Length: 259
Image (cartoon, rainbow, N blue to C red; front, side, top):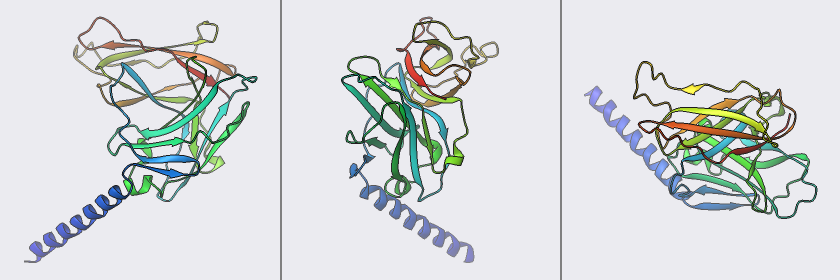
């Protein structure tokens, strides 16, 4: 009888927790308007491209509920370039709740300086959704007219003492199963940079059908540009597809590197 009572209590608690989650999720369905951002739930991934760049981080520190997050990135001096736009958004790395956040266009970004996006309190949307800090990706970039967007690696943190990393972590998604991914880096003039790049491949010698990156999932890789001078760099990716001799190669990722 005691065991049966414990089971009933556990089931009752599970039901209460489930109800609370449903209520919280219902309350934040759709996008909410905040002074510096739009944040909420949004069906934002439709047709998946060969490659989708999801996020590029330098630092992303774990946080507890009720955290007050900051985002920092360096925007280079653009010498009065006309038609310049800056964007910053956050999504789930593995989509489950359709979380989405984007900075408003009214935010004043400053050329040639570190830019800080704050406040970004987790209590508004992230906590009610129960999102894990390890499942959030942030992508900042700027664009001048119709040129390729320039990625600006971000720091996501609460205290300045958390800013320690120098390597960049790229998060990407492919629409095909990849057995390997080749990475190369060149400067803005097209000169190849002689730096160490990650070796991203599965052990085909042991299994010809192995998959390193399964389609539809988000995966990271690290790239350390700390030995290079500040400036614009182009990261070229070539993916080798399972059972397909034709590799896939998305447009180059153009990134601004700042120490």
